[in-house]
Length: 99
Image (cartoon, rainbow, N blue to C red; front, side, top):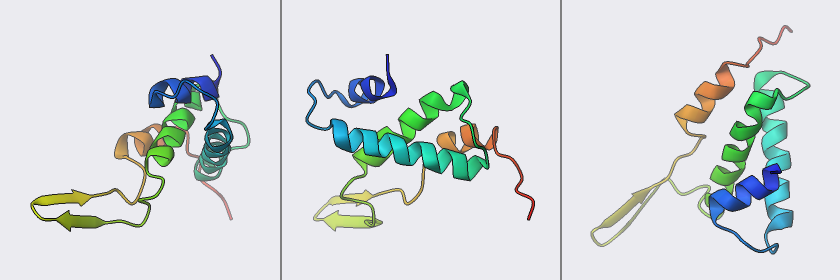
């Protein structure tokens, strides 16, 4: 199954209306991983992490800059970075960049 199909399954999307947006998130997630880890090639072990990043960013679309919001007794706080479990997985493949 392709990454796009995996992401659609994780998000519960069964049609093709979001394919362009999801492909953009996958492309940006791939670039982020390469830059964060200082690598040129993505190991297959990171394919699922890239999918998770794309899903996370898709779900955060529209609330990127919201730190906290309260309405009556309802209060919401959103993350401003990737979840710790994703960062931990990336750190295993991160290379030190020599300047």
